[in-house]
Length: 250
Image 1 (cartoon, rainbow, N blue to C red):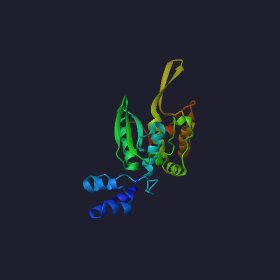
Image 2: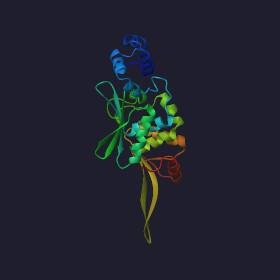
Image 3: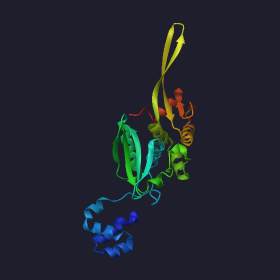
């Protein structure tokens, strides 16, 4: 695997008339790749691969990454392909087409790679191929997330602390929802029903739950642990706070 930053250099050298052997010596790009580029310069120029923010010291968009990290921890996974490339996939319900578009935009912004959509029963898998997805999501590992330790690395915590709202939004868009809760109160004159909005977040992984509730604490949003896997935000002021940057799925 050659350094993607050498691609424009190699293309300029080829265009200037340097031999494939000399360009290989100067850039490290495989000779077979250089031969293809020399034969198809238009295709080579239009297929500039994305640079990994972790490997090539490229700034990552903090808002897009924090949101995508929330989506990944909830409904995302990495699948290794036979050639060593990984496919990032985010499962998005077809009931929320706006969420599908938001996930695709975040994937493209974070790694500037081609983003595809694969249809499955009831959902759309938003995905992208790259050898560098494990660099951006080191939480990847064998087995389901709730069966192993999940924790953020230092550079991820810095981004999440700076863009906490986007992180919470991604978690809720993946494993949460905004619903209208109905409560019946029995009175002498008859039953009366009360309705109020609330947010629910459900994840089996205790580590991911703690990331979610820790983020809520930093934002000053009150929450309640409903059971082993569910966290609720029901206080009027807390719901209003989340409505300001999350809101219902669409």
